[in-house]
Length: 304
Image (tube, rainbow, N blue to C red; front, side):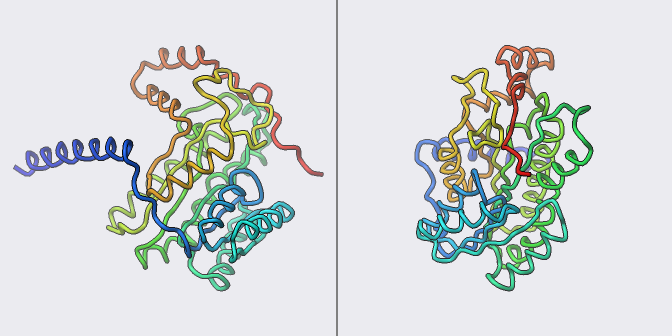
């Protein structure tokens, strides 16, 4: 009897949520107010992290900016204040080091307060084939792109759960849903970041902490300089994304409590990976020349 009731409940909820999704696609959800929220953004010194900082500043949030690049961090802080951010707090933090994360997190809690929106944005990429990639770079990729998420969640999630209020945002990648050539370490780190964020979301639901939200972001190639040299071989279907567009979509997703954001929308076709035979999906990727995207990778120039 329980099986039958649970089955009908599952079918009913599925139909309801599908219809709800269609309605919200036509009539967007109301956006929540983030004014006064304490927003921590890792990797805020450049790229998407900087743009998100400026947008949150305009919305009246209290900003906590983390980056290892002191120069970039200062510039983001200056721009954020010019964009209306009256409360901007900047911290040098090496997200590849657990103890550094915990130390700076303690400073934030003492000096600013409990973080209510955490944006794990910091990331690194090597762009090397697995046999050409030094062990130290592989370890750095995993430490920044994956392990840092564990430490920031452990530092700031308890206060969110205690107040039943907060938002966890993981900036992952389409490479966290499928593997790309010359991205073995990067893809591994992003697959892990997606899996970690999904698992924590499940734990939060089990605790019935409905006021703590999660958003996972998986964009394709973005023109921030991080993937300099990479060129989309199928620009009509999978164009390189402009940072301003990506940042605005992320802000909208956060304010509408959207659980998952994939950019651009055409990249939802990668779901065929779980439907088509492996060889058929590989043929599709070959047709789209996806395997060539990293061929001319240069990345951001490294400072001496």
